[in-house]
Amino acid sequence: MEKTLVVIPTYDERENVKNIASAVLESLPEANMLFVDDNSPDGTGDVLDEMHEADQRINVLHKPGKSGLGRAYVSGFKWAIEQGYDYIFEMDADFSHDPAVLPKFLEEIKNYDLVVGSRYIDGIRIMNWPLNRLMLSKGASVYVKVITGMPLFDPTGGYKCFRRELLEKIDLDNITSNGYSFQIEMNHFTWMHNYKIKEVPIVFEDRRSGYSKMNKTIVREAILKVWQLLFKYNLRRKPLIIK
Image (cartoon, rainbow, N blue to C red; front, side, top):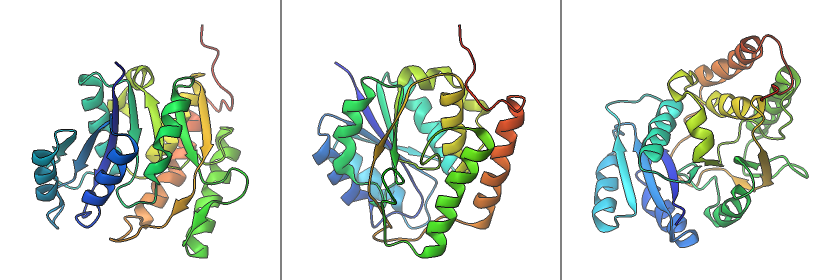
């Protein structure tokens, strides 16, 4: 039987984790979950331990300190591979990503290597963002496409589903991004190595509670990472021919 895991990184998400877990497991009752907590000072880790005791479908990895989004996902993906999961989701804890879409992703991943939730297919599908945040996100998508040639509508989006076979091909220890450029780097490897990507439309809603982790360091990292990826492949802007 194929096994599904939903990986969710957390840092100060005490207010959200119980509700997001309930919504995910209602949408995909056969799935398991893995929360990767960066030693949240608000006690998120303690709440997650209680949730694990109450429901064995919920698992927790405790990180020793705040290491960032990319390191959290790398830890979660390695755990998923070790445990033999076939389909591995990544999503946010704050309900920006609607758990009701999970079955759609699971249906599509049967025919693709990576399924990406897109906020920019058939218009802009974002609710409750200020204009400056929207312009930054949309501008980043155009920036990535122009420089790398990667033909994704939403290359920075963080709602995804991977096949295990794809994650096994990626040298996760050499994924250097730690902020939202992690999404760009993972997408770029997948596209450059001719794996099949499917974008599905989603509606993205700003977080219901808690606070955003976006900052200037994350933005700078993403700006530089795009150029690093271009030079990594010797300015190539189309997929490699894989024999």
